[in-house]
Image (cartoon, rainbow, N blue to C red):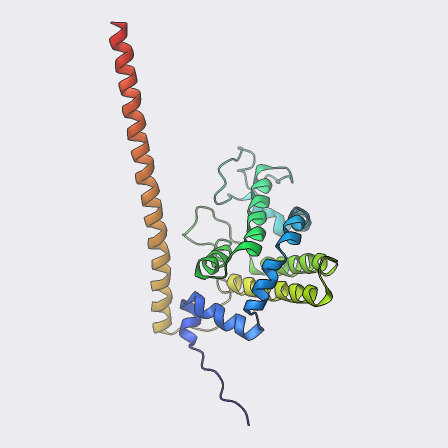
Length: 256
């Protein structure tokens, strides 16, 4: 007898990050055991990170369709020279842009093996996908086509699992568990990229309203953060100005 299929709220798949993750992870069989396997790999993966990062950027530099995106304004990168800001100027592997991106990928991989699998980490993984698209939530204009993101995940998964499958630090059962956990993880991260590119179906008015509300909540949160940073910077500026004024007054007083 066929069991009753589990009900999936299709609206929530597009508006509720935790719900979407639970559905996809449950479908592919990504469990707490897989999460533990990824954490267990930390000592080995951390040592492999520089090699993995270099391999990724060597691969990206092989194709003009992927390398061109590093000639555009990079969100979060402040140290750029005039030549790098010209989109037509090729970016070298030793440029500040690539150094910055390598640091970001290094942080991403280290977070993967050290983070707790909670909503905060899921929001980070979701942000990684969102930031590669054209969105008003970031300063840059980078919009990487999904075909390149998908290809990169296939390559990254191959590099990581290939290296881990040769590790002699674990027994065969542990090694298989770790390799399988990474394969599942990259599919999960890929889903959090594809959600911002792929339009699975025409949304109903209810779904459009829910998506718009979710988007507005994100934008409001970012505006609050920016406002708080602006107020903090203004306060620091006022204090610095007051200190300089007092010091200057004392100097003039002494001079007279």
